[in-house]
Image (cartoon, rainbow, N blue to C red):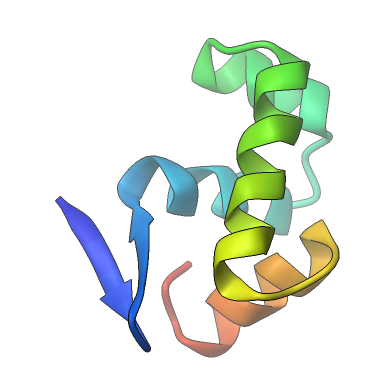
Length: 70
């Protein structure tokens, strides 16, 4: 099931990725925790940023936190 906010759809996996980053976990460690490569984490993060219209991972985390999604 996906979360729809302001016409933007984020999956629970996307939110889990952002939540881990919000805790200060590195991209490579997020990958290990989610059992995916660091490169996959970066690619998914780029897709999230593109969908929500922000430029950086920090902005993506702040965007999700302001909307109380993480």
